[in-house]
Length: 125
Image (cartoon, rainbow, N blue to C red; front, side):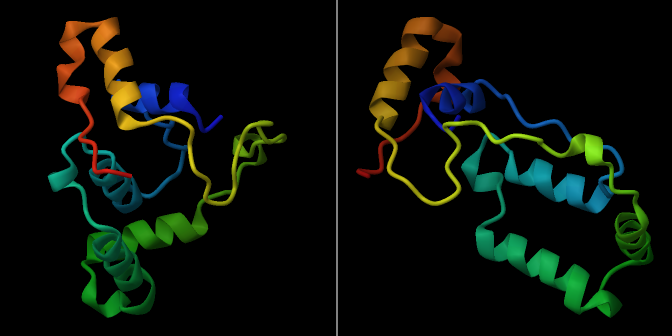
């Protein structure tokens, strides 16, 4: 579910499992996007540019990356990795969550003083 528990799990470092046969270039991009420091994450425009280069400008990429792209194209698609049923609280369009970064910070602070690195700045949303 996309709720406060998911937000707390992400703050504590939980990330989705990387599916077998995922190309190394995609895994690297995914991990960059997961960086705890927002300043070290690529922007959506930067991520788009990287993916566009993979798809539309293959002549600009290294031989290693070309090999990774071919690995991705030729990777078997396992049906066991697909979710058979959606979570009842899952949202597939944008929605306003009924909690604030202040609420998350209060919960994190109450759970452990060691989690101060997860403090979320309130940007006024």
